[in-house]
Amino acid sequence: MGIQISPSMLSADFGHLAAEAERVKNADWLHVDVMDNHFVPNLTLGVPVVERLAAVSQTPLDCHLMIEDPDRWAPAYVEAGASSVTFHVEAAAAPVRLARELRAKGARAGMALRPATPVEPYEDLLAELDMLLIMTVEPGFGGQKFLDLCLPKIRTARQLIEKHGGETWLQVDGGVSLETIERCAEAGADVFVAGSAVYSADDPDKMVAELRARAEEAAR
Ligand code: DX5
Ligand code: ZN
Image (cartoon, rainbow, N blue to C red; front, top):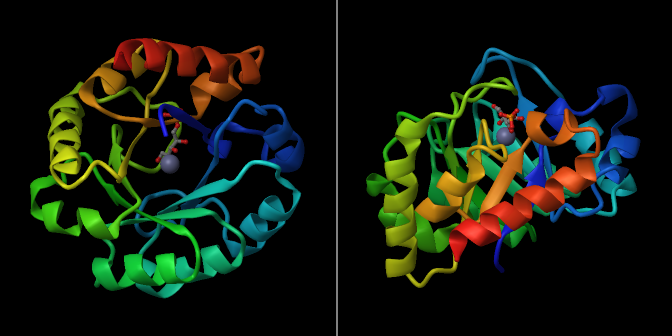
């Protein structure tokens, strides 16, 4: 698939979500952060908003669920129209069953790891996942500083993915900008979430293109 960019709507204007989605036509995905004020200390949006955004957006939705009990709630985001749904392994009771359910409903299944969660215990789950998300900040808020301590985990994840056929996409989320994206790409990430870097730019669509160019250069 090559390098993909997924701007995070968390940094967009929630009063004009459809228009904000239109501002990033170069994007491969729109990253939608769902927070429940339990798994993370912040509250954002849920199924009804995802349903409307999916209906009006030309770009597929990449839903990142920072919620407790994803086993119960995640399938509804596929029904709402998300093309990719990512749950946190720390919150999932039965990640294999959940990933299979998401796929069976027709979405790509993603699994996310917080910065302190190691990747090695999940090697055998990679075949069940379309995407692995390595958080490069503690989830909950946009605009935080990139955690360099996550880079070795990105490298390890890339090695494990290659060992198992290389099909699983490797996403990074948190503090990704023109300054940090090269490090992530060199370490092996191929899907990049960027919120504040994209939506605080004068021209968000141009920033998407610049981020992509920089990651492609670094991945070479
Ligand atoms: C944080 C969210 C991110 C957030 C990233 O918990 O998962 O998707 O929007 O924002 P930036 O790119 O500003 O760090
Ligand atoms: Zn996110």
